[in-house]
Amino acid sequence: MSNHDLPTPDADRTSRLRDALLVAAFTADGLLELLGAPAYAALARGETVPALRATRGDAPLETLVRLFLLQTPVPVDRARAALPVEDCVSGGWLVRHGDEVRATVDVRPYGGPEGQDWWIVSDLGCAVGGAGGIGTAGAEAADVTGVDRSRLVLGVGGASTTLAGLTVRTPVGRALDLGTGSGIQALHASRHVTRVTATDVNQRALGFAGLTLALSGAPAADLREGSLFEPIGADETYDLIVSNPPFVISPGARLTYRDGGMGGDDLCRTLVQKAASHLADGGYLQLLANWQHVEGEDWRERLSSWVPAGCDAWIVQREVQDVAQYAELWLRDAGDHRASPAEYAARYDAWLEEFAARRTKAVGLGWITLRKSGTARPSVIAEEWPHPVEQPLGETVRAHFERQDFLRATDDAALLESRFRLADEVLQEQVGLPGAEDPEHVVLRQNRGMRRATKVDTVGAGFAGVCDGTLSAGRILDAIAQLLGEDQVVLRDRTPESIRLLVEQGFLEPVSERGREDGDSTDSRG
Image: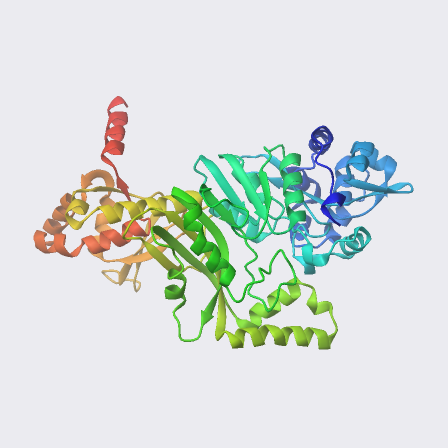
């Protein structure tokens, strides 16, 4: 299937199709109500049998599920009860065979962050699960329409929603969705960005992204074909660059949606290193990435060396897989486990040979955020965090870099003059043997955002507990010193490092003088 075989982005036809989908409740909420939670979750995993059982009737919503999600042909008369069939056939959304119609693309309902009803358009059978997740019906349809398997365009998966949740959503003028695929990141950006540019090396992906935006009622994006920053002018800058790139570290470039064609993790490194020249001052680059754990090298130092001058960075490793585990994951993604044993073994061996040649002992999976701060003393933090987090994290990411600005600009004397507030939903836990007079240690734990936990001593626990934005850090420490019978000067000298750590990790939030005055004013009116 070429771009010419995709549905046409005719505005009137697309609008009528969208209206029909809404009338039939072909939405994320409508699907959940029809299918029930178990079948809905199974469909998200690419398993269709529960949904087939739940759509045996002839209601319009059941018809749409069978057409667009299960790739099952339905009688024309039944389709007419749900859709403007002639419009859809003329526009290329459906194809007719005798007394039946079938879908040419996968149309998946997707709930926006503020309750919007959106739809993601992708290749048949590719809404989730990668190329290896194509079901029998989807694979047959793909063969009929002539889709080049290497050029498949996927819909919404876990990576897509993870990146969408991570993205800073500050209203800005210009954003770039690099490697747009089916357009989900561009769709999210359309809510808070004046002008969205979307690029992809796969021309078919640009066609799908345009359909996703049009069917969801979002403004059209500036769609450009090319790899990485090739389609972007040398003087073009963006307030936000977001990318779910083809980051898989593989021995070839078989599948465009996942294999970038560069050796090792060079694609992600190149993207990070070249981003600074296309970021406006204060702008963010946010991407998902895989990176090599190279024999004899610290992965934190290796990735930190990617960060361009004048940029702060926050690199979070969410998972580590050994090379065999990683190869098996992506062999299955491509459907290679269905090949002959000899062919599968040869492809498996090629992956391991590639890793051995590059001295790669494991692969890290995570996310990278850059902010163009222009500072000569950048904050570059690379950390491992495999624990559960609370999405969306966009505001957590923004606040992280704001705190780095504060810490960089504040020496210890100014720190002690500053006021802090304990972050929302931070709990204190005391850990020790039952019946013991004093705990062995005290733990502060976040129930929001990154959900961090950190050990603190008696002074740290007491300090955090008092921070409500009214007293300076120095005055709180003086009071603690008096209570504990410690020397005030000594306590002031040894505590700033601990305060900085609590600020850096988000347990304490600096309170600006302006914010404090506003708070005081509000209190006085109450």
